[in-house]
Length: 304
Image (cartoon, rainbow, N blue to C red; front, side, top):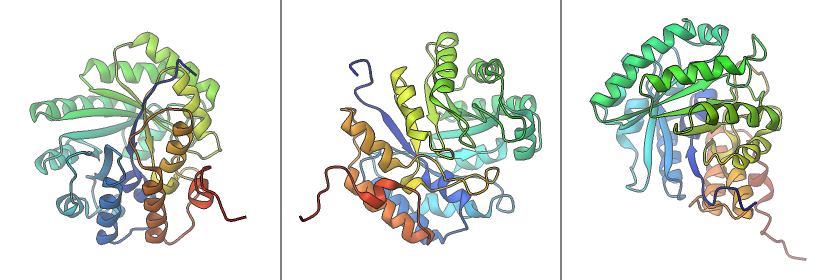
């Protein structure tokens, strides 16, 4: 336990990755949720995605949401962009942190953005350059890092090759995304270990889904390798169109609950995050998968 990080950074992705996989919710509700999350102590929030409204109607109001939220000086806000046009919109709106995604699997990338992985990487190089010219950072998210719903297992060498190309093109950090929840601790040890060996100085974020119930186990495996940067979604918001019936990302309050009991700091107020999860559940109008939202933290007692 002494080798685990003493503190981790959590990026709250519910407002973007979570809501993007739900039926569209009103703009006011999105603003309310982001403002509530900004008061939980979380230091990073992925707030919006600048995509074509006809492609992802859930994010059609991104400009308005970004303009109207009450931005906390303690929080770093970011946006996902699909291409150079989206990046230009985000940068023009004043974002200083953007993320762009590419699938390690060619089939998944074509399904997602109608181009090959190599073609997306060429576009990403231009996005990185555009971000840097505006003084912004750009993280490259590599989805299907632990498997593709169409191709099955994706060779680790291919995932590392995609990461290497992004790093060579100037990516400020890399994120590995477990898009449909295919990762297990053994596979996390293998890929993260290979990445650390190949690119020891590169910043790494991990994005786990709990589709098959291994989300927090995968976090523990990564902690054992010293990873200290994770995505999570309030209430476990989200899902995946390629894994019908699947739950969403690991729940932020479940991640905070687990690591806090391990002596690992996050700066997040657990009770405030649970309250935000309840708010998210009300906004969505369905029961969210978070067990900590249902049962409360282990320290909560009931009258005898």
